[in-house]
Length: 182
Image (cartoon, rainbow, N blue to C red; front, side, top):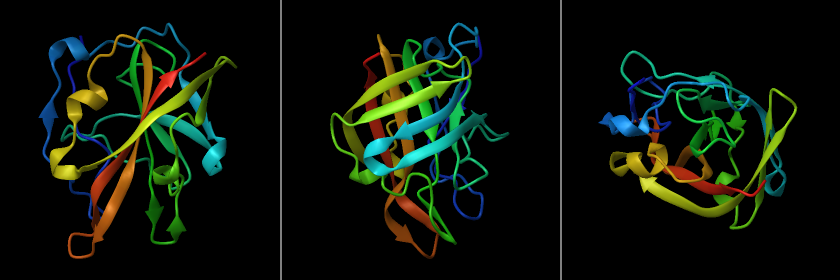
């Protein structure tokens, strides 16, 4: 089994982790088995998101980095694929030096909003937003984001809250929790 240490998206502009590494329980990790096709695109009509999804791996420090591009999202590929049992995790930037990024309006999403994740086999997994959370980066809920779940769920993570100019990072993470509906 692949055991991974993770933190949420939250690498500072200088490339430093935004909060400490926290271990996942061994039973929460899994090996990729290819049963569900990987995600290639995410669509959230309520906030105008229609963006490609690429794979993300943890870095040498055990940190899940943000995607390289401001207009793309990343999927933690050591976790479940969207539509598979468990919590699939997608991450993306809220903004950049040049302006808004893919998840700029994520904090404005509302309960019951639809999220569509297109997969490489042409199928689409549909999710409905259950809640939107905001947590300080130093109090990130690692287990509730990356831990096991009895059904197919989706977590979308971006930065939020106040921007700390001295640290060059946001103080919080915005986390969307969604349930698969089909």
